[in-house]
Structure formats: C-alpha cells, structure tokens
Length: 315
Picture 1: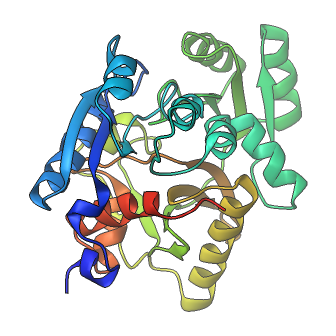
Picture 2: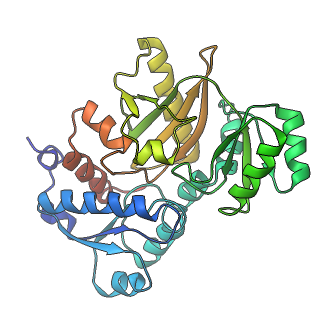
C-alpha cells in the first residue's frame, strides 16, 4: 500500500503545489539541492508540482499562478524564520512545516534556549557576544573550551570551537559577519545525536560521528567519512529518554509537521539540547531522510507525508 493510499489521499488532492527553494540566505546552495530532490520526488509521485527558486519574481508567481499549497524547502533566514510563513498565510496558501511563531522562535537560537530553560529543559550555559568585553566576561564566566555560533544561521555556518580568549574574539568577529547576534556556549564533550519529528512521531535517533572538530558544514554536506549510526547505540531506557526530551523540546517551541532536534550527551550521560530545525535539510547527505528510512519510509514517502500535513488543520 502506498503512503497516499494509507492516508486516503490521491496526488490530485494536493492541487497545484509550489516547491519553494533557493532564496538568498547563507544556506542557499543546500536549499537548492534539497529543493530539487523534493521536486523530483513529488513529480515521480504524480503530484502537479512546480519549482520556484525564490528570487525577485517569486511573489508575483505565487500570487498569479493559483497555487493550492506550498512545500517550503528554504533553509535559513527568509524561509525558515517565519517571514515566508507569514507571506503564505496572507496569500491564503497552506504550507508545510511550522507556523509563523514557532518558525521565528526556532530560527533564533537565543530565544529557543530561553524558552527551553524557562520550561526546565537542559541546554548548555551561554552568553551573548556584542563586544570584546563581552568575550572576556563570557570566558571568565563559562571557561574554555567554548563554541561560538551566529544566533540566526543554520548548517553550522559561522560556528567555531575556541580554547583561548584570542580565539574567542576572532570567532566572534567572524560570526558577526553573518549575524549581529552571536552566542557562545559551553562546549559539551561527548556524542552528538539528531532526532527528527514527523507529525507526532519521534523518528529513530541518529548518532553522528566525524573526524572534524564538530559536525560542521563540511561534515554535513561534503565529507565522505561522516558516520551515521542507526540504531544510535543507546540502551532502550536512554533512547526513550532522548525521544521524550525531543518531543518536549518541540512542544514548547510549537513546531508542526516536521522538525529535527540536535542534542549532545556529556561524559556523565546527561543530554543537552542544542537547537531545533523547522526546515531540515533534504539532500542526499541529510538526516531526516535517513531517520525516515530507518522508520520504514523511503524518500518519496517522506515528502508525501510532509506535504499531506498541509491538508490538516493547524488547530
């Protein structure tokens, strides 16, 4: 039985579908790859689908071509931060993934951490960097090593591990080129996990392994030696704990449809939430398709299930 048959849906039920990808964020190249793969999968499934590389004319196309729904594969600012979601709501076009507020919150690593902490969820200690004096104060408060990250970027863009005040100042200056708001966090030593949500289902966790200092842009999209462990190697109780933490992390942000949460485990076995992605990558190196496959869904079934969420009420 096909995924659409199991959902009592036919390709025609989706109408005219716009796949939105590309855009102008620092993650444009990844979004182009994700978008082309989603577009090809939907075409092969018989959906009446059209690809739009979001540029100067995309608003005119959305308004004039009578699309019935949109599959958002725009990573980063302009697509994952609530702005595209708000535009589509104004146009009355149902769309995949989270709504305006959850998208905006999840894109902002600082706000995400503040909400998680307010709900008693574990996330590494942090500071906000706006100046060299902030760097020195953060180093004194948090110690080394630390990790620096732009507050509104994804795909590990602008991130760096630092072990001295000079490295911290340099990394802050580099990250500031991407974002006026820069975070620095305590470095967590231990394995990294990523866990996808699809609807209300928590997908099998993936343990990540890399020869790089951390799971950076090259390890995510270019390297051939990155390791993906499914099953993740945790015992049943710890995996259950990790899944429950993921579900709660998404609930308090208010994600919808699909998302992916990144988590570290320290040397004492404690889990620490890093961030939540509301438009995760969909390339041949991406993690949500891997998790879906482990759960019994191939790539086409995955994109159809994500798109089917646009037929449901957001409540």
